[in-house]
Image 1 (cartoon, helix red, strand yellow):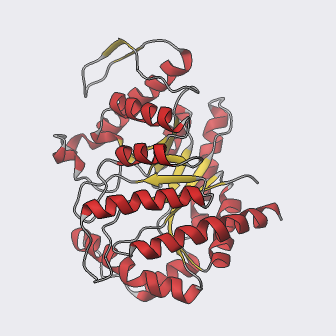
Image 2 (cartoon, one colour):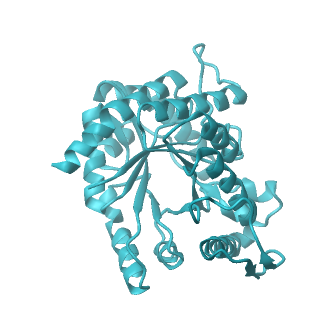
Length: 346
């Protein structure tokens, strides 16, 4: 079974050697160093998320991806995710076609709603339009992709922006439509919509057993078949962390996992995170944490269970220090990825 093994980061603001949070500018530079290392150790893909709040340093992932496009050689470069609802599909396509040109065909986009809503008021959108914004903008993006595939101008109309009439996009991707995933958190309607547009499915599995998402993978495949479309890739984005031993990985991760979860939890009414919660998610849930063998076994099991073409480990967790993130990336590329492929070959 051939599977791509990637890494995702949200550019979480990390702590330095003195225990204080680093400046956002330094975190941005560190994310670039992490992406370059991922390329050097043979990781297949590197995704950067988009946020507009002070605990994350990256609000413009496409800018960082452009920098990585010029300084890496093999790795796919994409988003985790692009919040399409508060962006413009035409500009998204133009930016990533440019990254694709710089990287000689290594750009990809994951389109989604995002799990935060700060971008809506920031860019002048009304949260009451949450559903229609994503639906119409995804429809427009799909029309742009179809225009590129057919080498023809695009006309489109909807209720959230002025219509396009015989519009053309420049630059055009050299190798056809941009590689584009749709990120889904567990809505059957979103799964079917991905199939309807003929876009690969990226499942965000951030809690609970990965096997519980098998019905969504099956639904996607059934929908593709019923629509007369060919089989398309299914990927998973899940949180995790790699260290030399299982105990070290969990001990390193927990205080930063808790800091991140508790910050968000205070906003959303969640109880404080506990070590028992982390251990339970690591033992039986979505959290992929441990020594390289432990992480590889869990990834291989998830790939087999869901029939995946892609697995992306979201390796950044709150203020977890840059040096530990770099060690995680090196272990993932040099030890975890080769072992996953051995297990799948067996």
